[in-house]
Image (cartoon, rainbow, N blue to C red):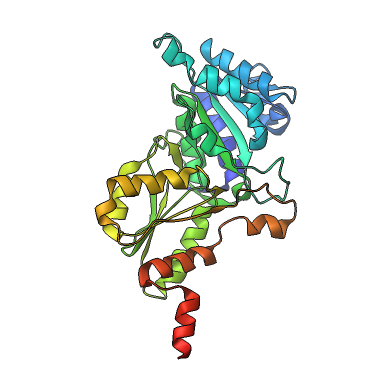
Length: 332
């Protein structure tokens, strides 16, 4: 095992896959500058800087994939993904189906997203649910360095277009990563980060950490929380989520993106339609607001579900009363 940051894990995955398959190319604004060692080892033809034009970058990558290459295109900040929607959604996502399988689009589009750098509304907007809703696309959003490496490697080898979201707040987070270059994490498999019996917490990206912190605090109150890291939003690991909900009977879904038509809504609907008989309380969604992200660090962080909010929701679900109500009752 090797300890590294998320940023280093991404770089290692790119290097290993370029060594594994000569069809893998890397393109995007500044990639040849950021990954000089890859240029030196694999050549300028396989690591290409591009203009800052997301529609052209994505369109070129889609064409390269259709032509037999396996491009990884770095589209930088997620809020600018709408410029690339036509290429990703209408071409890469649909043409394999429309062509009756004559074409495949093995490509990865990477984009940074979320709070953590206070970069403001036009550079911080979680759009993952948009792409989950687009047929033909797969969507990943890991939380640990090991998962960033293993899932990126699997995404590059997949025959379908994959959106790979990088949570800005996790970029410099460290963790243990398997040393083996052949270590892949299959798409569509959630990870149980902590086992529990009283309440299930489902999350992805940086809010997995908030759920784990909350679970530790809840342990002191004799509340056992199970934490599930989706990491793959599409395909979605329904079995792991439902098995946990059937055990605990309670569900809290946590993510930074807006709750309106978001991933939490889908998980809540999943539990309500396929595990309703096991639910002992209403499903709780803790999400970001339906508002642009602030440039202020304090205000930006206020829009991200924190461990304290998760603890309060869990206490109310399990014990049936809110923290405030419990405090008032204790006074009398």
